[in-house]
Image (cartoon, rainbow, N blue to C red; front, side, top):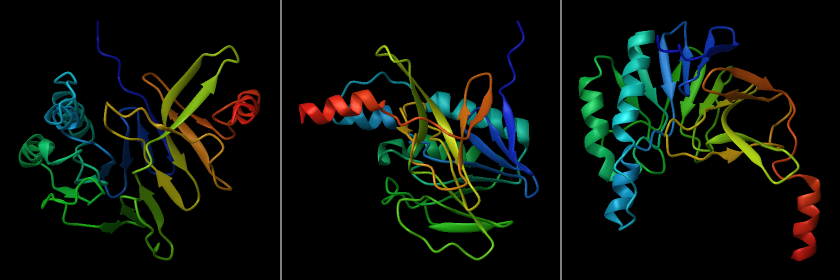
Length: 228
């Protein structure tokens, strides 16, 4: 059986959201992703938390497939590329073998990693940085950040819920979903600014959600207040 091609959606002219949680800026031919968290499992295992030895090979394979499909002129990692320095070897091996220039922007998890030398870059009208601290947006630019791991959560009213990674898209900013396969995501329901919408990233489909219900239904919020 032939492999299913990952979905992609043009969320604004020449800006594409790929179902593998990456952003493709087609005019400058730049592939952007955020919050890879290389070494997540190994970082926890060093601390005695015996997570399965899984994640880094899957990250490398997904990245390699994206590079092969898009053939970018540049690859930009928007920070928190490492979880801790325990993930440095895997990340640096990929950079050295990528075959394309990789710009590594510093995030709050990358403080001791020498490869994370940039705090922000501007490209073709986009201002790219991690997003863990406020930065002055250059006039006429769109901010592109990570850090927040946005997601959408739906409740069925009977105790079940579904959470999926999402991208926040608005007139002045884009917030990318976490690239890490370990990321659960932060529910962004009810947190949109004026003019923003959420793009849900599914395995077979990417679709916009202009208005979303609160992450916690009203009846549950009332019940929690009563218990407090």
